[in-house]
Image (tube, rainbow, N blue to C red; front, side, top):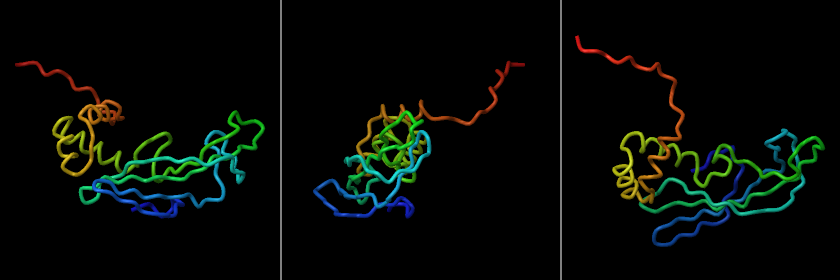
Length: 153
């Protein structure tokens, strides 16, 4: 369910009628500052981060991550405190996993807004048509040449 190189351990699993919640904590001893690349082992604090993931058997899935903030000891770095990154699982500031984002992107490009939202709902995932259209608008598309207008002969 999770990539092996993420460095997370499963603490508990909670479930109710509609949601599976996986409580995870980080196992990495060091983290790298995203701004300067300096590695640190000194923990400043801990915080909880919630990520939505792909549905499973018509249940929504949520990861509750216990992650940490580290001190950056590089005197030339602008950041004094940084959060550990879980790049294989999600991007910075995201509220969903990378694989859920990829699935929603595929759904948005294949079906569009309303049909995509209906299919997602049948799969156990609540997503609005506006979110799917926003995914399309913010996607980086390949750089194709602009087509010429064909004139009638």
